[in-house]
Image 1 (cartoon, one colour):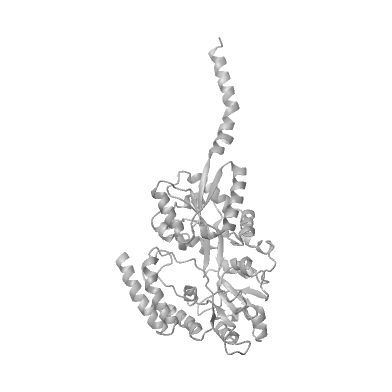
Image 2 (tube, helix red, strand yellow; image 1 turned 90 degrees about the vertical axis):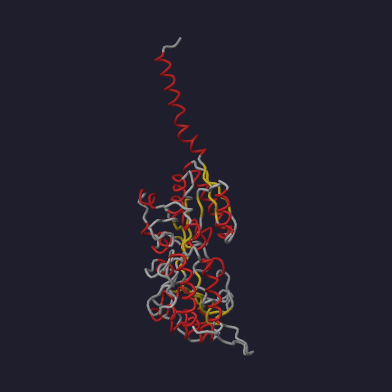
Length: 427
């Protein structure tokens, strides 16, 4: 019979042999995350996630299952149903607009402890995109991997044919006034049949809060979880008076007029349209900063990023996955190459011109400059927008039609929205 000391030595030896396998390959192979992804991000986004999941598994041994969810509001609805049924994914990829209600209900974990622990260099990400994922108490519920800075696109050929200086040539003189005057000159009946077939702008009113910021104002007291209306302030009224002019003078094309070659100026889109719509057009185009309003060149910087579910049992692993996706210029460049999206890391932004696009704007660095504009802002996060929008939109439609003035529209909206906010916050 073996001595007890000999038996102990055998046990220790076996442990030395098998423990590394259990603590590395064995346990890591069993580690699994679920990433429930927004369907509206599209097939290229899900392709990117699957490419990254394979690389992540090879590097860490952790498996990430990518589940593509519904599109539109169905994504949030499905997640609520899943959680109610006890099926909680670990990671999601909401943007502020789509995730507003869930943020308000506490669905997502605060990422600050992870960010601070790992000393993540947030200075290399546009500050406004971080603010888009931040609530008033300072909690950060998402980390951006891509941004969508809304810039000026313009048809170089149309400006040249009209003998006009284009936005790049105008430089500091690219302003509200020069935009309006250019739009008037560029709205034309080019074939002489009595019908306008070329317009100065495309969908210029569709991001109306941007002009409000360019005038130095805000629609509410704060962008995230607003509590008070500022719709009746002079800056808001000035912005809508400016925009109403484009409607009343018929200077706006139907949707998509810019990339179909029917409109000269597009100030409501971001770099995502470069790969999607502008590679095969038969005209020359370029980009510039937003036109300067009475106060600044403010632009909307929409972030897309990742969240950890508050009820996830794998928060540390989920953070490891998010950090893998976000905190690498090389992997963000891969994201940009597959999806056409503009990366959130400054280092990756400067690789954008090398992604293989057939056509790229000669002034493409304006996209980087715009992304870090201190006057930029992220999407308004209004959890009660389902109550507010039905009040706002009919009044705006009356204004766009010229049935009421911008001043009257803003006053009516202010009164109606103030009632809603007072019921919620007792203002």
